[in-house]
Image (cartoon, rainbow, N blue to C red; front, side):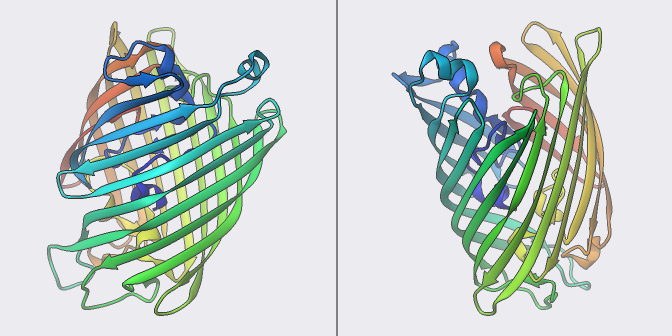
Length: 367
């Protein structure tokens, strides 16, 4: 749930920054924006800033503004590794949610070592389906606080990286519930400190919008939550993405994502379904598994069309109404390529689920 709480760049090697609109900004490709002709950007030397429109059923409609400073490189460094950078970002949406943060991404010794760090503040106004079995409707859920995350990894063999991660969150929430589930912490103020290991494997031809290759990541975190009570919990994540370009200008993309947590889990750190067609807060639980696939067609010059479908499952849902629910997701969208060199698209998607639908506007593909 850190990405949802942050709403700001979660910098990482080969990674993207999750945004409330459901889109992702390809952090590793920001250096290309400096050299490309993008009318909306503001640039001075090694610093540039660019606005990003957003829309999603979770946060509403708004605007993010991101900027980055790229550290100068020697010719040898340019050939062997991406440029290190310091970035800042802020976002505001029409439901009075906002977040801002700063991030650092550094590379050493021909991309043998990678460091990623992000810190910031978020204030989100969300809606949660009433967890009481005899109640209908939704509850206002206000979540605000500080977030910090840092990771250090080293290339161990070929395209494999291995490293460690630290996560700290100091979150307050306002939520009135008549019944509580012992698996979830719903206290007003909860601080969480986590540490763990992570591994990545990446053969994608272009992280911002791959046409070929695959990406695998896995991590395990042990966390301690303190507040009114002190509890420990564990988190496990695994994700695999695959991309294949046919002989026509069509790309087939697939994404499988799993999450499992045990112990007393803060409500804002539960597993979730990052599918389209419903708010992210509809399906929260101790385990989740979902898969989705897309057909991406570069139809005419900078314009493209996308059709997608997916399926998800959440176990031990926060809401009894949605306990152990199987969730479909399907829809279509259009794309406009704003940065040809890295295939970065503005996307507009219409998605449906069981009894809901949603419109998404953002930058970058869904996965």
